[in-house]
Image (cartoon, rainbow, N blue to C red):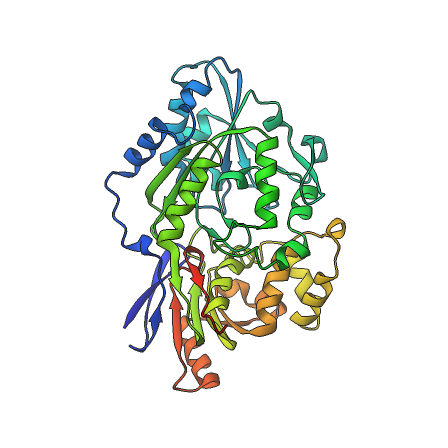
Length: 426
């Protein structure tokens, strides 16, 4: 059989044994009844659990729209113009600030802004990039259920109306992306992010892909969105080509819940126990660095035998994605040392990128990872205790040499788009 794997901005076709098990989200075959623009417009006109945002915007002076940064494939060229038009419908003179939710990521560059939003929006609208390390930009809003301080961007707190846009996909520890995640971690202080992403919460069996029930990380995020007075959201679901297949607008919690239900129904796949699992992080912009690509590795982890080999194919042309993340592994003798160290760290002592390091260490302790990436990432990958391989074909050949010619192979072409139901014996 032939399977196409997204890699950067292209797709790589690989020939695989006919016995290979393919795990894919049903989003690939979902055919929406309307165009992307029509889906978004209909959602704005018929919000869930809320008045239209044009009604909410009446009489408001300062309006802030939280949007995603360069690491998220939110189709803002489609969503944002329609959103802005709806907001200005009854209030053409309001002052709108578009706040780019970088969370703890690096700042979005001008080139990335143009690529994501288009020249017209960047030229004509007011954009501000959230900087989580700038204490002077933050406002204190109380204490999270976890006990951590809630500090978020002052622009959001001082707004007369706070709204957001985003997309909903399975998330490897928050359950799902979108909705409340625009506030925490999106526009939160690094101190708040560190508390929410502490080792105890990441280690919880409730902090898993597709689960919100009892999820301590989600609980903090919901609290943050309520305290920030996030009044309205526009969230979309997208397919493998990053095209809108559904849109959900309205109350920050009700609309998000509906969107999560939709995504869950498409994304759930029955797990397996494979000797070799091949996956990707969905191509650009999600596979720009190793940090982001840990997400898809958790889907492979759920499908691999305890000693199974994971083959991750992510471009990683932007390197590791987090200096502390990289140094944690580079300075350790092995992944077990990283895992043991992080599990002892108290919430108040959480360090940068610790959550990503914790999950990657968990995977590397139990699985050998062969990593197909841009050649520029070779030394970084090997410093981080993974094996760089130039192509998927070479990685598969190497894996079969280790596991034997009768090895059971599974592929998850887009690891970030599935919720794997583990087999009962795992």
